[in-house]
Image 1 (cartoon, rainbow, N blue to C red):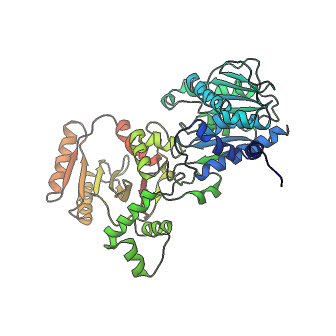
Image 2 (image 1 turned 90 degrees about the vertical axis):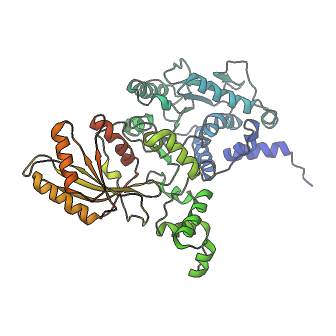
Image 3 (image 1 turned 180 degrees about the vertical axis):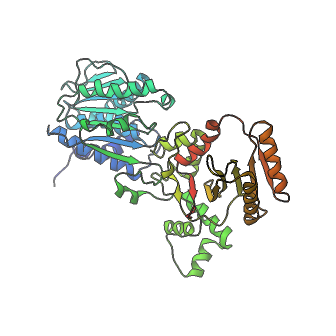
Length: 477
């Protein structure tokens, strides 16, 4: 009978698989029970694939950019576990790890050291011996190093086999062009000059998207940086998912399934079981949600249904607003501020049956042959807070024609639709609004006296539109 040393076997398993290493050392630094979503293994395998070439000192195939939501274990995988695993295979490896602030960089270095100084790590990898060193420059007796730095920091005389950049910008600094430019310049002029061998050392950038000119976009827009593999994992399924094949790994969260069952009962007065029995069909839970979507229910498939379910994302959107949520969770940063309506982000679709209050809002102009248009937009919101543009009436008319068009449109819309009229400043604007109100006697009317400038008033819709939350019916207009 052959006896196998259990420690040697476990060490070999960890060396052969970074994902197995993460699983076996998780409890050494994190007390909470792990949730092994599919993306964790995927990212581990991607990092290991890059590392295998470095171990052999082979030329790199590409640099790597990973865009993923906060709370997805990205830092634990890339900045804490990965440098610790590298030494189990090759203790001579030097990793340079940087984040937006020194306290964060030091925290991640401390967590990585906790892994390597655990009794389990010492038992499985006794050849990894530490030298006395500062936390920001950990080293072992085989000349391997883990160097911690922060955005803007100097790295004098040190070179890395891996350059790992984990969140180079803080969300609170995204409005500062100086900070954005400084981070991009630091990556270009400092980090990219700190490679053991430019042909071998890969750059790994892990971050949530924050801005249209953040380091992710900066590197993607500069072909001189060389080939880049871009992994993009929005919290919910969108066209931004890269590689595209990963869309198949997105699933509905449990709270979405429960809401779909409630929608089924409210729409058809039947439970899911009753509905499926009547239709003589047997649906899996995900397929049942797909069917309810066909009937007007709104739902997205999630990258991590347990960590980031529907309710958690709704709260994140409420906390961050359209701008923050679109960048940090959808990995699709939108312009901060007005004047930049990305009309390509309007979704053309069939509206659901159930809607909230419909409003026909008019922006009036008074010239018939030229100049500005008079526009009346019929808008509403569905039960899932999506904004719908249902109809547009637009033209250049004189005052008499304009008032008749507004009246005829109100008759066609019906008395259940609220008519919104903007009252322009000054006595002329007030008189024009009052004239329209008289013509619309018997209809529900709201006179809107705008506050603030047009830019400020446009921002909420701009954020919603750029955040892909504005929908439009297909029509000739």
